[in-house]
Image (cartoon, rainbow, N blue to C red):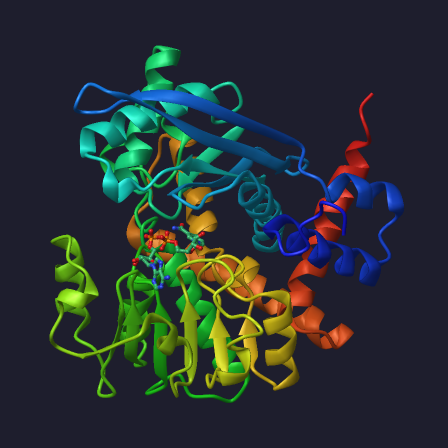
Length: 418
Ligand code: NAD
C-alpha cells in the first residue's frame, strides 16, 4: 500500500464516501472534489506554563466542504488527536449537516494536548493563542467551532472573547456551545444526547421494540453519554452500565445517575464509586443489553470484539465508533445500527439554532428549542429510513446517500471557480 495507511481515519472516511459515490453513480469530477478536504491549517504555537517555562503545542483546523454554508465542527483537546483525524471528522461533519439539512459545511480541529494535565490558566492561555492562530480561517461567516472531546462551554467562551477582542466588538455567532450568559442557546448542552435519545426511541418503535424497560449500556459519560443516560432514563429505559476513561460501572437494576453526575461534577472518576460493580471498560461493550451507546471515541467496536456484542440496537453517540469491518459483521447479524451522521446530529442542529439566535439577537425558550430539535431529528430519521427502505440498504448507507447527493448537488450547481 506504499505509504498509505489503510486504517487511518481519513482512508476509512474516504472508503465510505467511495462506496456511496459508486452506489449513487457520482461522476468522477465531483467524486475527486468531495473525497478531499478543501482547506487545512496546522499551527505550532508556544504557551507559557504556570512555572514560567514555555511549551510548544500543535493544533489543527480542517474544512472539508463549504458548498452549503459556512464550515461547522468541533474542537477536540486530546493527546492522540492527529491531522488525519481532523480531516476525517471534518468530512463526517459535512455529511452530518447535510443529513440534518442545516446550512453548513463540515470542519473539525483541535489541539494535541491532555487538558486534564493543564491548569485552568494554562488551558486559557493555550485556547486564546490557538484561537489567534486559527483566526485566519474561522469566524461567524466562515467556520464556527463548537465543543468536542475535552472542550466545553468555558473553552468556547475564551474563543468567543479572543475573536471579539480582535474584532473590537462582541461576535457571539463565532462559536456555538457557549455559556448562555454570552449568547449560548437553551438546550445546546443537552442537544447531542437529546437528539440521540429521540432517534433511538423512533427507531426502536419502528422496529417493534419497546424502549420502556430496555437495558442500556453507555460508553462515555461526558457531554453526549452523560446527557443521553439521563434522557433515556426519562424515556423509561434502564441504564444498567456506563463507563469513563477509568472503568465501567454495572448495576443490573439500573444506576443512580444523579450520584454519578455529582461524582463527575466534583472531578471524580468511576473507580472512586462504590454504588455499582466496577467492570473493565472493554467489558461494557459486550454486556447483555438491548441498546449499546458508544459515546466516547472512534473505533471502539472492531473486528476483534464485534462478534461478542450482544446489543440488538447500537446508537452511535460518538463519531465513527464502529470500524467498517465491525459494521459489516453487525449488519450481517441483523443488529440495528443508528449511524453517527444521523444519530448524534442533535449537537450541530442546536448549534445551528444558537448561531441563528446570535445573528438575530433574539433568543428562544427551552421548549421551542426542544420542539424544533424534535422536528429536525424526526424529519431526518424519516428521510433516512425512507431511503433505506426504497433502496434496500442500511440506515448508514441511506444517510450517506442522502448526504453525498445533497453536497454534490450544491457543489455542482455552484460550479468550479474560475
Ligand atoms: P466529553 O469529553 O464530554 O466526554 C467523553 C467521555 O468519554 C468522558 O466521560 C470520558 O471519560 C470518556 N472516555 C474517554 N475514553 C474512554 C474509554 N476508552 N472508555 C470509556 N470512556 C471513555 O466528549 P463528548 O463531547 O461527550 O464527545 C464524545 C464523542 O461524541 C466524541 O466522539 C465526539 O466527537 C462525539 N460528539 C460530540 C458532540 C458534542 O456536541 N459534544 C456531538 C456529536 C458527537
